[in-house]
Amino acid sequence: MKKLIYNLFGFGAIALMLFVSSCTDGFEELNIDPKNPVATNEQYMFAGLLDNLGLYQGNYYYEYGIGYVTYLSQIATITTDGRPESSFQLASVTRAADGTWQTYRNFIVNARYLENMINASASDAAIVANRLAILKILRAFLVFNMTDMFGDIPYFEAGMVYADPPIYRPKYDTQESIYKSLMADLDAAMTSFTEGVGAYGNGDILFQNDITKWKTFANTLRLKYGLRMANADLAGAKAALAKVMSNLDLLPAPAKGYNLAAFDIDAFTAGVNYGRGYMTGVSGDAGKMFYYNMATRIGTALWNQISDVAGAHDGSGFFDPRAFVFMDKAWKDYATKTLHYNPLPQGFDQRSAAENGEAGWMDRGTGYKAYDHPRQDNGEDGYYGKMEAGVATSPVNYNFVRSDITNAPEVWISSAEVQSLLAEVYTRSDLGFQDLAKAELCYTTGVITSVKFWYDYAYNQTSSHAQLTTGWVDKPAKPTTAQMNALLNNPKVNWSSAADKLGLIYTQRWVDYFQRPHEAFYLRLEKGDAALPYLIPDAFNSLPAYYKNCTHLPMFTTEVTDNYDNWKAAKGDDPLDTPLWWQKK
Image 1 (cartoon, rainbow, N blue to C red):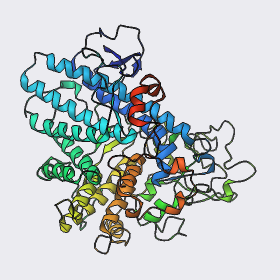
Image 2 (image 1 turned 180 degrees about the vertical axis):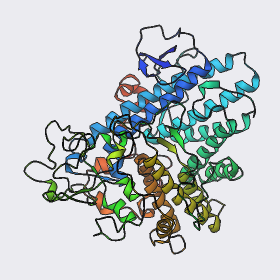
Image 3 (image 1 turned 135 degrees about the vertical axis):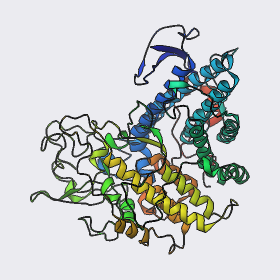
Image 4 (image 1 turned 180 degrees about the horizontal axis):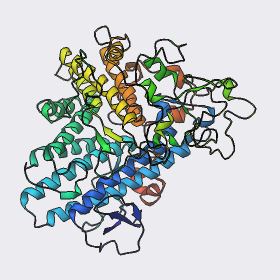
């Protein structure tokens, strides 16, 4: 076992990250001089950096997802007991900040140390260049996410505890300067690689030293974040996108599903997806997004985009096959044990009369935990229980939150998302690449790729539970060619009949973001409410101002205390409604 001891950049605390060849261990504490770490090597350290990103995503899904952006993105909604002024308010947002910021500190210190090791090594020059290029790409991925989450953050001086002299209280940098630096790093990485030469050996648990895949990941990041910065720096966005569009072969291969003449979902590929759960020996943890909030419900915003007939609660009105993956049934009549699909109206203080009885909004039953899903361990039907009495509106599908699922992926970037981003680039007239025929191709491919991904998700899960070895319980039937054609021809999805083609693209991207509400929230900030036809604007009216106008997380409590002067100089009192640099103003 190899161990690296590091000094957290903000406050000089000591912690230990375990990097092992299998990359399955977690973290421990050890009181050892942080300036004299136990020997390790580049391969082990890099594997640890990759594995650590999963913890980052887990914290993100757990707190940031349920307490903040699930509601504000309208990807789902929350019943009264879960509303922001009760059990989740800003305390949840603060917990999200604390967990994710600690992961950033750990990552950036170790990344700086690894960079120093690589530069000082006696390895072949091409191997050194490949290692540094890969490290830049991975760091860019995390830091893009962190600055989108917090706004201005310490970056250029962050993690410099091994510098001479060491920096323990780093200055804050603007989101604009960070974005531009990361885009330059991606450009440099793309031109630094030597094909056919190794990098991190067995430590590369994501792409197994496949340089082409790392270049593809970098180019994908340039597409996503180059497009995101278009509001603030159109010239910079166009320059970044020009490099992407001249390297289209270095984007995840799309699933060629736009030809539906002989559609076969089993033979259809969902393309290349990046994230935890796609790494060798590393499981995903995506269930945390919904797991800790039994108050999460399918709202009318999503319902409106997957259903044609509001009253068809038996599911016959669903034209989008993803509906059967996303949602669970609720009680239509508990006395007769009749279930149906039923959305909770999108809004701040919504719950059905059936969930507001004398026993509270839900009959929890003996031993029922406040954070459990309504099906979970309720004693009625074993491990995969019947729905609790009193639940009248549809929760998210219980299979998303089961703790026994062993391989639910945490998606960082999906092939469907890439196709949607390309469709936007080809549709907009201000970016210089407008081609509506190509836009339609990418849009349609993205929709079908998304359907395939979500059905793969349901059909390929495995379980550690002795009685649920089949994984996903009550799998929906796989969509047929006729169902896929019905989806693509529905007026809410059909490209040819749509007057607002960008609105169509954004709506389908939002649906695909079902388990990534942070991305759905960023979509709202980036495009503005007026450009998003799926939103129900009135649902935001009764929200407290501090909540509905939030754009980012508050800074980690200890960071504010120990790095106060730099925090205060950059952020003032850090009002949570301060616009992000790239946000639609």
